[in-house]
Length: 244
Image (cartoon, rainbow, N blue to C red; front, side):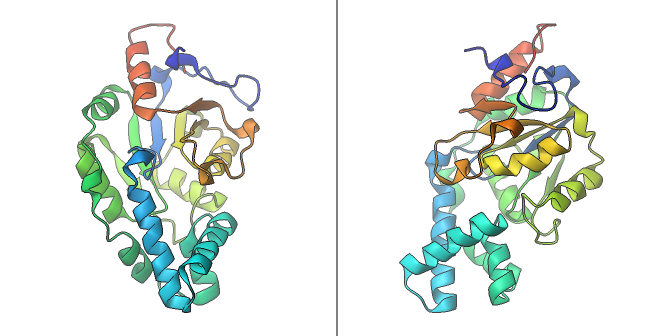
């Protein structure tokens, strides 16, 4: 399959054949997107979320897990639900859940090379913290390829997929939305980006939670390997007809 043109033409409100050379802004999710879900790093973060909730509410881990996922679906991030219903101080929660060993993330020189060679600015857009993002990027070897990070604190702790957070991202980095591509493993986080005119790319990891809220009308491109797809885009740069 030609990774230069994996798309769902006609389902979105705009073209899915935007040439990589015409992209000015690449907006990249962090967890389970820039690194493989198979590392289980975010699984460990999730386990710490469950433990935090169990300790906070004095409930068993099974009930804490149900609360965790309920808030994820309702609010876009577990933290927001805890803030709304239990007056949790966000930094306490974030510091606790991100206290994990990230050495499970291997360096990815192929990803780094593709990011370096693709035109335009690259931004990380995450419901996690800047410190967590920087640590992950350091492990990948990609720190120097990222122009900026928009984290949950920059979003005033209002997580994706809240539309106002995307508007804040766009304003913060002066993003031209019709020249922007957004890549996400959580498919419902692509709807606000699509509504703003961005080309949307769903990294389908096969996981249960990434599919919640699936709607083909706001998915322009579906992939299952970010590095392979970006490598294809880089190869297409030498082809005047190469497109995504």
